[in-house]
Length: 443
Image 1 (cartoon, rainbow, N blue to C red):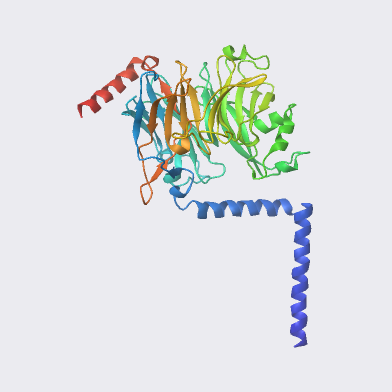
Image 2 (image 1 turned 90 degrees about the vertical axis):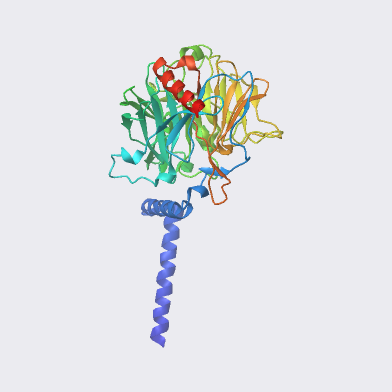
């Protein structure tokens, strides 16, 4: 009996010492804390992937449909005539629709049919979608492909022709957004997982998902890669990184848009030069300009917006963005905001009405059209809307796809929505569109 008691006490003592040792390692971050922490993060990520992604309908790829309406619900005089490109989270494809909602062209390509990285396993097809498609005048298309539930979630960038035949691929951790400059170069965002510590910023503890701006040639060859967090830290704006929210882990910037600044816009801004890029850093509520040659952030601003997306530089030097969480008052919780950056001055905004509020917790964006209207992507609502300067909706489109057990869920619309006028397309591609339009009319 005595031996049993002593054995039990020894076990308790060993467990207590192990507890003290573990507490010491965690509190002081002494060896082997980093290895244990990395293992813990990997186990948590695997657990989330296997428990939180049992169905795409339970992820943010699908939302409760806010209306029974489908397709074009408003089409008034004053809308900018053209064709609208969009993709949504239910499929690896992009659709081009006419003003009445007719699908006049479609691009479709399964990434696993062209995947050539044996060291990385793709997510099931139902979690893979085109986060940003970009249309060229001749019908060529860029598709930025991601996989929900992966870390990092980007899979690659593919350029295909109008027949969805692959022209080239760039397989990297691309995500969110891209821009094509006048010289044909492509600017895209990528991720890497980094484990370096940043002195003076214990809140940015590794492992981190760090963002990069990558410049590609028109043929898809990488020309340059610049770390966004390094460029911010070496600038006067580095201390903005101390404003990371309490609920942010690993992905401290969440850069979600990149746009090349052209000469016209740069001429209106004393702190900008053409060839620099405008960035939206969602998780520190920051809009920044990055000089790719200096590899340094040369200007940054925080404003009344919160968790914003899609910062666009207008030709007059104003900046247009989708403010996901920063609106308070009538309408929705989101708004599209146009502001003059220096000094900060809001010159226009749209937030919807009580009858048609604007709200999307994540994603979303906008395009300023040549006639002055704004084409807005309300991703969570599965809705596209074109509004005039005074706020009148002159065109609205609701994603017609439904899913879920009750068929009451709607796939979100992705970031890369684009309106293109017919006279901006090549005659050859326009002929394809016209033939499709005539075929639909005949049926």
